[in-house]
Amino acid sequence: MHKKLICIILGTRPEVIKMSPIIRECQKRKLDFFVLHTNQHYSKNLDDIFFEELNLPKPKYNLGVGSGTHVQQIGKMMSGIEEIFIKEKPDIVLVEGDTNTVLAGALVSVKMDIKIGHIEAGLRSYFNGMPEEINRVLTDHCSSVLFAPTAEAKGNLLKEGISKNKIIISGNTIVDAVNYNFRLAVRRSSILKDIRIDEKKYFLLTLHRQENVDFKLRLENIIRGLELVYKKFGLPIVFPIHPRTRKRIDEFSIELPAWIRVIEPVGYLDFLNLEINARLIFTDSGGVQEESCILKVPCITLRDNTERPETLKIKSSILAGENPKKILNSSVKMMNKNIQWKNPFGDGKSAERIIKILMNND
Image 1: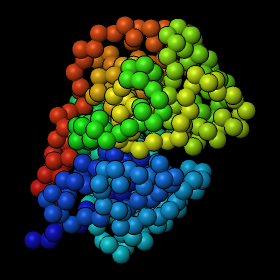
Image 2: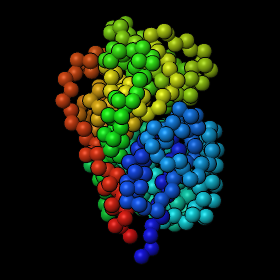
Image 3: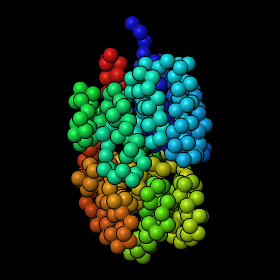
Image 4: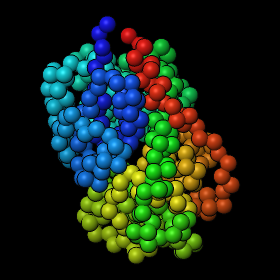
């Protein structure tokens, strides 16, 4: 019987985290696989440290793509991926999420008639101004097997005419990753001591999406909203700053106040520890919306829409957009929230389920 060769493509911090349970499951089953890293995220704290902390094998291939326009990135990735596929001849390509890396991997695979498994399929914000929305829709329609994390995601795919025979509700591998790393983060991370902050005495902020940070007025409105929150509660806001956001803040000559504690990007265990101990989390990240839900820390989503509507339904998160008063009112509401929600993203066995299905599905 022909032994299947799996190619796992990743390129960003969230992909490393969400693919880590898949890589471990492949190792556990002694499967033939290799990891191809596009290097879409290329600073050490957004890349190398995650492989080290999560005890993952170094990628067999690293394309070193780095920054550039969307077209430049995807073009470089596709060219590099094609060369590797010609050499390695994988039977299955696994991609996760909605990045330029994911789209590049899917397009090359479909053109070379290689089976594609899309992990975290079916997410929709229904906002095409978000580059990630285009990536996820195109990838879903290229894919051979679609691993939808929830019933809602499956429903989105069915509405678009994708065959139900291609769709599997798998849960989300983020649950596997959080469960695996929770105790490690609590035990190993000294980030609170390092930055001299106390448990539950701070808010956590992440901000990086193009539709937020590339527009000066929107970025300033978000900061005004956070200022109202600070005046109301008097708690500092810890902000591990993304390189893209730092660049825009410098370009726009925006002065961040002292109560926003800007720190360099941190590793996964440190970030998980910051999430665990935050009073509230402010974010425009989809993965952080999921992690805050799993960790039972209330979340304010600094967007006008979300592809994680499950968090809104169970009220672990609230959409606040850029409106300063709405950011404040949402914060007041979430600070007074009785945390009783149940995690909708699965049982923490998603990787096992995904690999088992792939190995039994010819």
